[in-house]
Length: 239
Image (cartoon, rainbow, N blue to C red; front, top):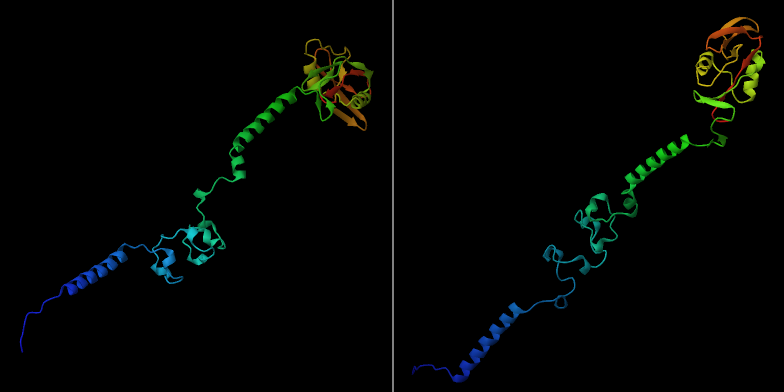
């Protein structure tokens, strides 16, 4: 049998080159082509094949992620039905609530309130009325020891009568030492026959007692309650 050299025909060479180019182009196209969502069959990619953090929340179906699969501190829009706790919320990401905005001025308000209270206290010193009552001394009286003292003595009467007359005027007889101190005030003159006080230093029996009196020179004496002496009443500032 005759053996000879096998020669390739030109047509065979062209066909081989065309096949090589076709196969290489397909591989290149497959490497360069970009696959989008439309080219992927629904539910064909399992969750464990998705790169973490590669899908934004707005690309997921609402309520598609159960609460027990959420990472603590992360609240995606797709988990609107998941119950939230304090550990799920980062308070640094929250805006100031309206009520808290008013709390910023609480200290200022407190200071303003205290200042107004102090101002009211100053005005109270100069007030003319207290709870609807007149504040101050009426004509014919002098301010002394926080009260209004009658500037002139009244007609002499016994001690019980003097006490009753002062009570009807909303006042009382002065204490002995207070009357002695009042006698030293400029322009004050006690009655020459002493004046009654509200002190009872001596008590000897039923309706028998001595009442302290004060002389013009401020000396404290004692006289039976049935004797007659002048008196003056001490009336509170508020009347």
